[in-house]
Length: 335
Image (cartoon, rainbow, N blue to C red; front, side, top):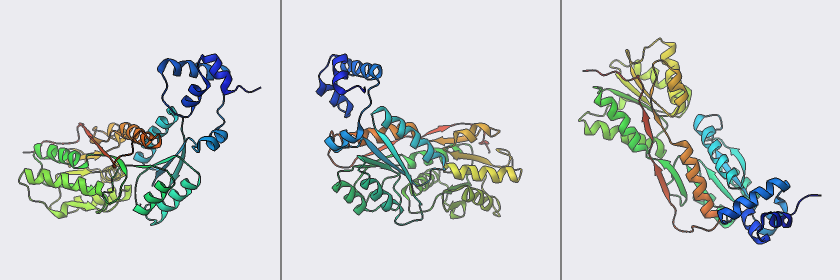
């Protein structure tokens, strides 16, 4: 015979209402929490999520919308978000959508609302205010990660892209480089625009004139990283250093360098972004900008839980975290 919530309460030495509060994500005393968890484990108590959902109108599930589950950022942040949600008693419904589909995000938001999820965490591409309003009407809060959309009222967790691009560019300038190439995503996305601004700010501060020929801004893909590096190095007056400002861009740029047997940093100084694996596998070790992806995921979940539990109902918040530079041996000092 299956154990009941009454059995758990009796073994834990607490009231049924305290067990119910714990199961439904409420805060209980630490001592009670431990007793309840021990009782649940000992009795192998299984929560009836269907019955609970009918009673509380909460399914204890959260939708996570990521444009591409194939890239490093998407897979990494999804993992940390899922870990945090699971620790808080929530299951995860994972969806991807095409960045080139103008209705892709809207369709998946509708799908998740129809599944009666309690909240959504997503990378916002092609999202409209009406999508957010529709979710709000269904009492489904949304938190953005990776980028904020100033025109849309929504909580978001990002990194300070201006700051990290500025510090990477300044590091190259401090090592004597004046012709610095930048490979980035398409213009119009605040992630790209902010990284370009940081790059431009560092050049301006050093009195180095901006050369638009040293900017390759297409899309965030390995192909774009490959083509960007190729175009920059084939110029009549090529850069002495290149910053690839994304994970896939970094992979593509390194592919070109390897294919053409171009030595780093002897022939070109290079700084990548996000991909710590390739940074430490490549010889020499790459200097690379690193996002605090775990903290981004944890912060997004915390903000969403506050909304879902009615612990915060104020104005939209943007938490902007700092990225760091992992210094390798891929930047040569020149006179």
